[in-house]
Amino acid sequence: MSANDTGDETGAEPTPLAEVGPPLVDPAQAALARARAHARQQGPAREASRSSTYKRRPPPAQLSNGRDPMLLGSAVDGMVAELGWEHQAAVGAITGRWVEIVGAEVADHVTAEHFDAESATLHLRADSTAWATQVRMLLPTLMSRLVDELGRGVVRSVTVLGPTAPSWTKGRRTVPGRGPRDTYG
Image (cartoon, rainbow, N blue to C red; front, top):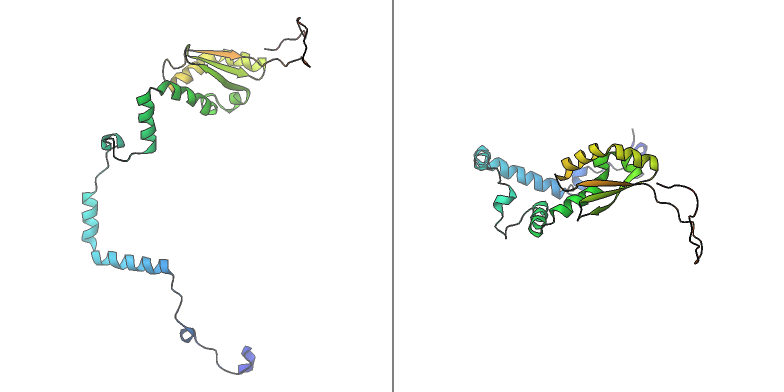
């Protein structure tokens, strides 16, 4: 095979890679190689001393003296307890976790509309009278589920409301009377 067969028109031999220049070095691979070499120099004694001195960290409540850093969840829980917001936070969990509490099918048709803190009554709104009746029949199960999720005494009663009737008033003036003869809820 001649020099012209390789595609080189001058007829010169191709230059080996070693003569082109220094090979490209990946900085991350070089740092990893240095770290591994340093670990090999430390030897197995370093590994044994590290595992024997390792102790399980105590929970954040035992670490905190008011100035130590703590986990965000622990800090929020402490603030909620300090301000007396346990009840409100538990009730807020109803709307945030409604699908988990009642299930996806019921949550598609029934929503937690309002919570009256004075009477500890949860008001639910169903999208049809059939679903309102169904949820009324499931109230004992729903109450036990709420007790499991929120604790005893947070929700004392549940009121199930049917769908709201559409407004038939048009314009600024209305005439008093019975209105349309249909039932809603």
